[in-house]
Image 1 (cartoon, rainbow, N blue to C red):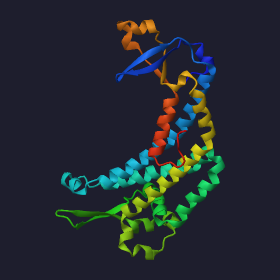
Image 2 (cartoon, rainbow, N blue to C red):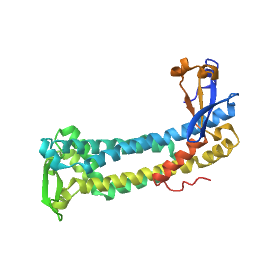
Image 3 (tube, rainbow, N blue to C red):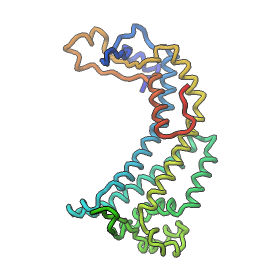
Image 4 (spheres, rainbow, N blue to C red):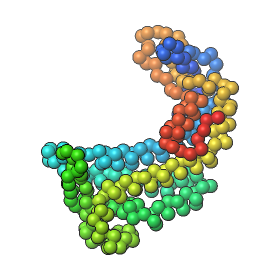
Length: 296
């Protein structure tokens, strides 16, 4: 983070440009301070990126929880006597997923995409209203937390098509959930639905739930970029004509001190947010499949 103007007086700051030659990175001292305009541009870009990256980080936590459960090998767990890990991973997933969507719905979207919030909430409500899987996974977390009951009652194994292949199904503890009447009623799912045994498979619902949460996340983030696109374009255009077109760092250590080998270990640099950071941010958004993200 950058220092505020009032804090600039308290420290001597030396600015350095990162130079890459023959794949070697070196720091080149810049013999002048960054201007107030440059500092403001950097701070403005830093704020926009940090808001997006906080949401991106929370989404990764949710997805990582899902991938850990999806990749778990129940055969291995049986051998080491750790079959309770399945319930642990399921609880972790539904907890992280609910934390993510509640944060996105109640705090992030109303604050950072306020002009699009009603449109976004209608999409969120549609998933909730139309998807049994969404409602099940969302309320399963409250059931587990308040009842103290494991979400998975049984793990079923059947032979697969390949040699030594085993299909594993995590069967929901739906009867215990039904007894937790206040929370179960929120599912608005008829008893007839559970007569189809495939609907008792937790992973069937988890796959749909994570896909839906990812769609809502991508929509929210794309709306955030849309809301800030003019500002980002302005920052990009203005940075091109300044030293901020290259990676920049600052330090309390002077060029003379840096050249002194005895003091090298005390040399700490602090990155300044620059144009290459904006390009890396755009690349992340492209990898996340966020719509309408094109670098001009």
